[in-house]
Length: 239
Image (cartoon, rainbow, N blue to C red):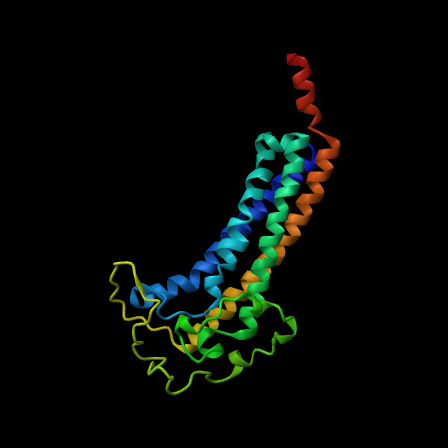
């Protein structure tokens, strides 16, 4: 196995670990939302968790490149010029996914959790249009929402209190599993979950971009250098 194939194997395992971590991080606020009262779309921590930066960007878009780069370990398709070139091309999707993951995470950190951004914990106050991400100058990383004692109003306009039982809204979705855990995620916990999840997702996305660029370089070298000498000699001996 040549150095480029070993390089691809390392990149493959690294990207696999990052993609799994991104998926877990994205699921964290969703699971917290569901465990609290047994339903989704009800006590959401953030609007941005539903942009799926970790599930889609840092997870699914990275997996094709992972499968191709790990093929080098078993001397599969990556052990050929075409396979190494394919691994480089697939890493373009990984770069897009990593940048998407990082961008959404940065906006989430800038805006804060839903209660700090919109003054409400209902998803009907979320705006999912792409125009939110057109002005990078609007980003503010002074983390006022995190340092303030509280950012929740005493009474929300739709008669929903932050620590009380929220009224049912149009986004209510019950999976049919009833939890009687009496768990309440207060505002401080929401802030900690929010900043920990999205700071980690931003780092994961950047690392995915770096690993993908590294694999593009390795794939191009593998495409130019060809298969390993050991396999070429075995093929000639068998022939």
